[in-house]
Length: 400
Image 1 (cartoon, rainbow, N blue to C red):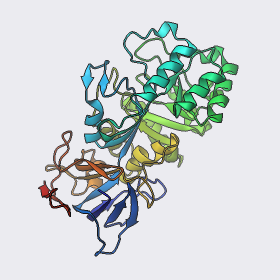
Image 2 (image 1 turned 180 degrees about the vertical axis):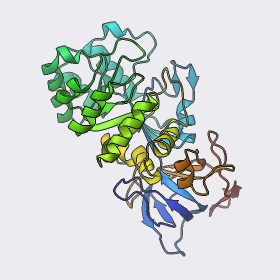
Image 3 (image 1 turned 90 degrees about the horizontal axis):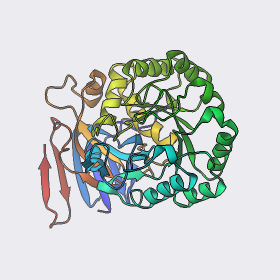
Image 4 (image 1 turned 90 degrees about the vertical axis):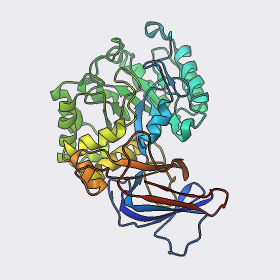
């Protein structure tokens, strides 16, 4: 549909940490983007969606997923996981490397192999909108011996991220710094596995001493993925660096609370990003991003609007993406949700502050309705929603 008018908005979350909530009551979507806030009541549109005085927020941005090919993940032998994440409110996903390809020998990775794997994944999984989601695949696992031609191939394939995981950083400082420069010259951002070893048992331990000179664009799962760095290192990273810091649902709850509260106390929540670090040993978690924002809000003293902004605009900005913010001209990636029956909250903000999952009714990606009337991954919201379309063949329906 070309235009959609969303009316009767009760709460409006922008995804912008500087101004995370606005008194917007309606919005107009045209040509995949937000065209106007609070347009005139008589504005003509191809379809109208009555939000039932519920909340509108940006689609969640998962900054740390591990895709393989399409919607199949061998780590949990699951098909359709991306569509389930969309039903959990996640509209954009960013690969933190495609290391779970069956048969991949982590002990014998070569520059040509890792580059080719990233290019193939970018050209397959990253080429298609699986279940409507925006999946940024093709994140290379960096290894020694790469040259500029490898980074040229990654750029040409549309890669946006490269990751240090098995790379022996302590022994290859000069090479790593060259990689940083080559990648950034080509518009590719750098992420690094931090903390103790990963599920593979082969990743390098990475704490403050390495991060202080490596200066990545994003330090992955600083509170554990699954094992965190030491408390002392965590404090130093927060206090003495300024790159983006990621919290993942695969980590340590105590370290997460420590990190988020310290960032808030220092007034630097703008550095914080979220991801799930799934599919992986932690599992497949369709509501992973929702759980993340509920946790940092209810346990770590972050306001609901701030938590939503961290899970959307912050994470998108750290990865150089034009999503996660609801503003005129921005992509219309939207979640419409409300408190569920039995929740302690009478609003989405109240529910999230209490740690309650909201019930999702609609998910839109580029203005297209992907989840309609009821998510299969959350309980239904209490309020009723009404959708009507001017196309007589499309009909009209009511969702509750």
